[in-house]
Length: 99
Figure: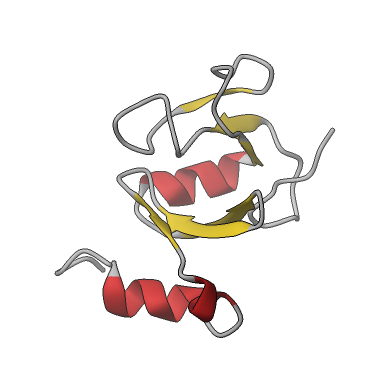
């Protein structure tokens, strides 16, 4: 079984499709039942729970880094990738008033 692409600790059992087909990033299916034509991030149940409650997850698709939650995904600028993408998200993208 593949490892989770977010935490790399647990087995991946969920397919997260944050870049489509839905209008938000809240598209989760079982592995193998995902929507064809959209990138898949293989994640564990713990990371799925974290993403759904708003804890940001960092992932890479085709050499591009993204950070997102179930609500929205942000493309991380190339100049930020080598420094601290999560700090960039906190300062730039985090919804105001969010914990």
